[in-house]
Image 1: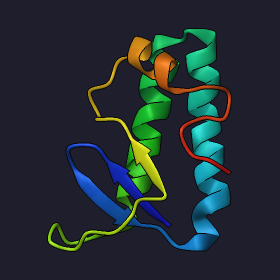
Image 2 (image 1 turned 90 degrees about the vertical axis):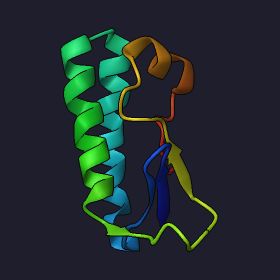
Image 3 (image 1 turned 30 degrees about the vertical axis):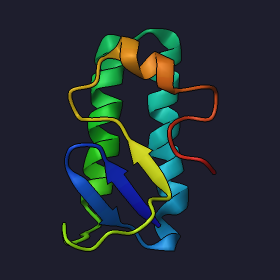
Amino acid sequence: MIVRIMGEGQWQLADDKLDQLNVVDGDLEKAVAAGDESGFQTAFGALLDFVRSGEKVPDGDLHDSDAILPPSDSSLAEMRELISGDGLIAG
């Protein structure tokens, strides 16, 4: 799975990491739904860190992204507009 973080690049995550990725994404979705600013910051940071723990795709190599995450400086209000009940990661 290839995940893009807008403004940073792409990371390759092993397929066996998808379930764990969905758990982290679910935590973000819960924090956003609750309007929990602190929880949002923690969960979004954890999601970004999880993605960054994968293998960085060289900037010159362009691949279709399976998921696209907003920039790391996104706000809770911005995230509320992006999450529609399934989190940011489909699956």
